Image (cartoon, rainbow, N blue to C red):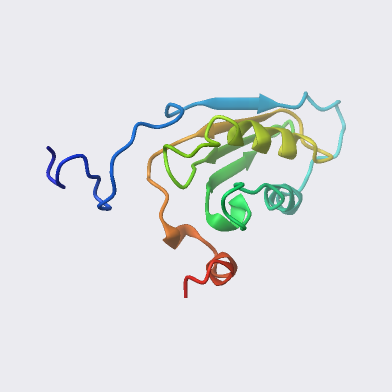
Length: 137
């Protein structure tokens, strides 16, 4: 038993072991040729908005699952993301889908996606558009 009750987390739901461990990393893409033009942040966001959790009709970017992304000086991209729940059935696949999708953007080199469970995802991270789509207003 913990301070929240038997087997409960701070949000009042059952604690479950993550489907994949904290820090799971997925990689895709290849180094860009020297002198290549780099993708813009907007192009990367646009690609992220094409990836969906199969159980939720909103893209992962608008759901707030992308905590940060950083374009490197050589065109590589590092992404820190989470999922709505650690026991998410697509936890093992989603980081690879994200890496493959972003690496397909013209001007993106190697992509590294790191999965984190901290801080836990909450609905407050969603965009207003996502909340509207999911009737959360």
